[in-house]
Image 1 (cartoon, one colour):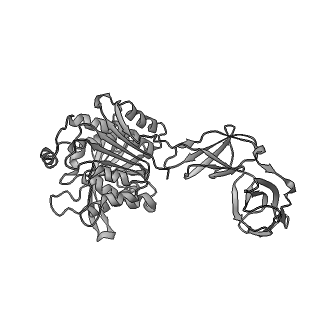
Image 2: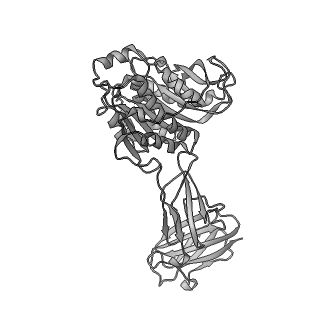
Image 3: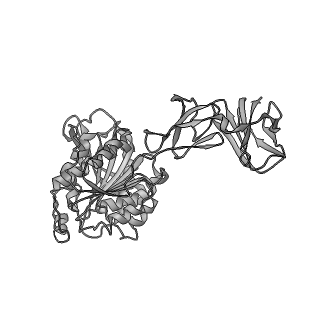
Length: 465
């Protein structure tokens, strides 16, 4: 994951927010009931909304591949209170999924609801391969969890394992006024400690149903991944959804000072939410800038505001260049030209010039490092160090004899002709080091020997027979 990135944003002028123009499109829908065999074949009735050629139930899906958004409803609210959600997201190229479970007033099980959300994150990828499903062959391999109030809290109960290795398609979580779920022996706040995936939390500053200081902020503070908190000034709790008797009645006796309309709050949310989803679910590299601009173009008061795009530096350790940011993949460049096969986090530079590295993290969008000017003259390479390797050509064992006059520790690496590091060790031995090279194929290689203390090194060409 990237280093901790977080922003606390207070929107102070809703009318100044740059409006994201929604795509025009039709919305299809259907209902399915799936069973979770791990929970005694629990039935999960689910409403699905998708981009279609014409509006209606079971209509033909529009051409394309669409990410999945699994959405959890609020306490004592039905899924159909969130028409504003599917009408905002589906025309912008998303399939939105609503479990209909745990919608009653009594005996609501937050953990079961979280497991329903978690199950659907994985199942909807399977549904996309169902030839009888309206969304057949139209599901992209990227999913977000989203929820309001109880559903937002349940999303964090579900995401504490999704962010690890449960499902590689899971990309991000979004909470709309997420509520602390501490019933049934669980806690959304505690679960947030395990959430390392990119997270976006919206809050209404006048929310008295789930006060931000008790619910939204403790969840946000416990997230360890890239995260953004948006507090909408004058916003309420229920305005993230459409009119709903239970929610609106609860807010009428608990929230005060709401000074904006439901439409204003929902538009503010959509303006910021859609580019976030486009970046993390669609690999739209320009969308993260739009996300930042949507916030920056508003009149805002900020605390701990930093860029959503992490920076990358190149760290030089005696000619071994390393990207400061850990990613899922890398690509190195020399003088703006791609270095073929240089796809590891570290690269041994043997040529003077300007090096850069592209780091890929949660998305296919590269994060480009600052340029680094490297000169081989910064390290003293000596053929007279009397470091020898044998036998030559080598086979399954390579011996490295070290000059006893050199000062440990020593680093020994073997590179192929593309600069890819195949084997490395650090040792304090001052005589002979044996390297197991059974897993190295036949060919030409380079051994790089370095004494960190004396900052002297030696390159030795090798051949494996």
